[in-house]
Image 1: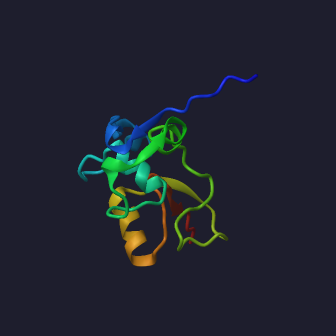
Image 2: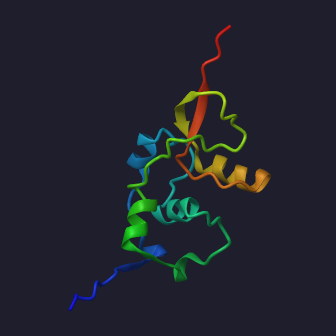
Length: 123
């Protein structure tokens, strides 16, 4: 008989790890206000502010790990207006404000830290 695996759940308002070094590593830190871990997790899960009460929401340890400060940037282009025929390198990650603007203006979910492409244009 297998032992029952016990999942650990956290309230989102308990997710308070420092995100500063993680955002700096993704090159998306800016002079914006501090971004708490709970807001980072919600953004990367596609839930934007005002859509869910943070104090009542639960997250399992696995998803907290994957969507929080252990999140890895996708290798594919994430910005909805980037053309796939051009190749480029990621210069900086999307900031929180840029992610929110894309959601509001284009109804496109692009997580914090996703790559902005820098095209090499040769004349």
